[in-house]
Amino acid sequence: MASSSSSSYGIEQLQKECYYEWMSLQAKHIVDLKEALMRQRSNAYNHHKLEELVGKIVNDFQSYAKRRSELTDKSCSSYFAPSWNSSLENGLLWMGGCRPSSFVRVIYALCGSCAEAHLSRYLLQIDENIDDGHDGDSSMSDLTATQLEKINDLHVKVIREEDKLTKKYANFQEDVADMPIAVTAFWRDSVEADVAVEDALDKHEECMGVLMAEADKVRVETLKRIVEVLTPVQAAEFLLSGKRLHMSLHEWGRAREDRGYGCVHVRMQQQG
Image (cartoon, rainbow, N blue to C red; front, top):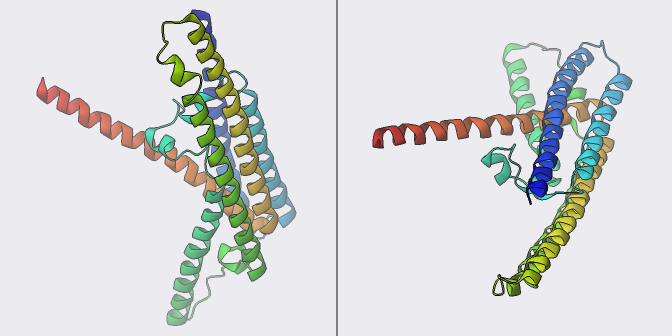
């Protein structure tokens, strides 16, 4: 049993290291994307180089998903409530990660915020008769009707895929709560019952690993499809916003837990 526990700890540690390596890489991606977009807007960076950077970032995400899949062979449960995440992040998890449809929602949010910024800038130019030199081609508010139609179609498809996986997840949970666990809960002193439960949990772990791999596949494919629809500049802006959101959620979650712990600690001192 100690060996099994030690093995599980070792796997979870590898999963944790994999996650923090990914977070470190995302921080680098943010710097690279910001620099590339700034250079592109000053005409010092061509679209081909920007397209290469976007492609590399998508490939990095695919490699991360593959690595995660490799680390679920022995243990998958850690990914559904990671110890390396804050409570906030775990509360937002879906199948060990973000919902693929959230990628599309980022685009919708960017379209709205960019359109609002454009309007404000336009009104300012009218009032002051100035030209800020803004290149509208680099804005997410310039998505064409064709692009928006493709994004919307993708959104509908992705939601269907999410619903299918969510139903599978519910079925797996029901299966593990039924035979043999429900029965062995009564015959808990039986050696045979212990073996049956272990086998059932191992099977459940395996099924969950397959399910998470399917979810990761949808996440990767959704990201690829979005990038195909967008121009290189739009894709870079989208990726930058998505990565900023992920990093911010991680920081917000940790900050909230730190504040919460501080309050509890103060109350404990006062009660003492």
